[in-house]
Length: 126
Length: 476
Image 1 (cartoon, rainbow over the protein chains, first blue to last red):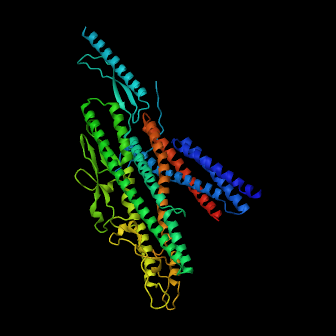
Image 2 (image 1 turned 180 degrees about the vertical axis):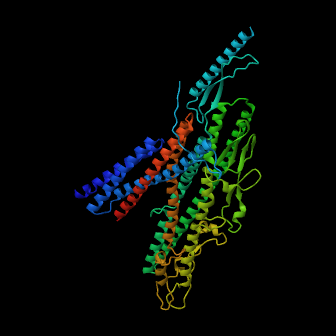
């Protein structure tokens, strides 16, 4: 009886973390600052849930548990996808910003995209 | 009266302009879901007062294409990378089944049986049944290697056929783009429908190979492969070709030649193909498969393993004796292979057709003489240190090959999954950018980039935590 419930909490935490990661992947398919913020909050939850797994394992001692291990391995796969996504997204956004800077300010004397300065503008209609 | 007619004429022109604007809007609505269609913005501008003709102002319709070339290129780049990773994922799948590390897969299973049969034979070297078991197990090993070589050969053939068909698709897309260029050149005014079809074809082409598009005269596009090799210039198409690079196998007869991509002038442009499904196929055909089954510059892991196994076993048997008392009789080699084709060793590995059980030499003539010394050496060959194949045991060497194939496949799967999201993002940005001011766009992108930067750091921490958790759970 003890054996079946020993890692119960840890498994639940892993399941919750996987659910959150799936949500994060879905959110990041639509780029918006709001979606990114929401993804960040979910990822912080994932961190807490993984901390819970670590605490349970420390408390109960680590025993071979293939199901838990495979759950963590799958989670690792999801995280690898996210890590790669962020690395590539960074490149993509940098490219976008460079293109916009060139269009707004042209090139500097050194051939680089001119810095983009955001100014307060007032539009008056009527 | 002149001024009255002028006023009526002007009013009529204004009405026509509004009608055209209505048509543009209607066209936008009708094509909302058309692939590659960019929103057309009807813009109404004042017509200057012309004293000479007596025109009294009015409005004139000008259609402005909201297509953003950078947004289009961002989508094309991401599609190109997605094409490559998806192709790698597809092509590496069959390789994983050949290099399966589980004990049920043919080569590890046959090796295991062979070394078990050596152990059993060592207990009773003169036992005809054990000798026959050794020969039978060796036969299984040879068959497993031959099957793996055949499977890899088939994968090589399929991959090369895929390369040919992908190049044909690229040329077909290039011809389609050229026909759009011809149509665009004939049109006096920009045609949103043509532009949409062109964009759709360019996206399809991008998933096949990495292309750069440059605006040409009168709305036509120039398409370059890898930013250098012209594929379409205006109304001219320069077809690509996939050819066997026969010179690549000069130093390694029997190896499958590498595939080169050449332009219409015969120049080798293979190195310029860096993404798209063609790059994935070239990687598998020219790099991954030669590392396993051999190519122009290498013998291939499977052949190295087959040769190492055959030589190690044969050396022990040939130095041993079939009798443990003089006169000593040297043993016969168990395995044969065609040594003149280094890249075909695995495919030609066989058990010597003339060997019989009594020709298997079990005795080590020493001194001291050990009646089952050679059989014991054979039984421990796989676990000897250093191992007989590049310092590794046979099973360990096979596992290393399987591991490298598995890692490449896993990496391709991860990348393909991440790339799907990036394509979705790029397409979403492409949709959003139409009609949005560059200032707004810049603010949004800076916000996104900084948030992504922060979220990316959280992901790194989660990754570290997962690694710690993995270490906390023992495997057995």
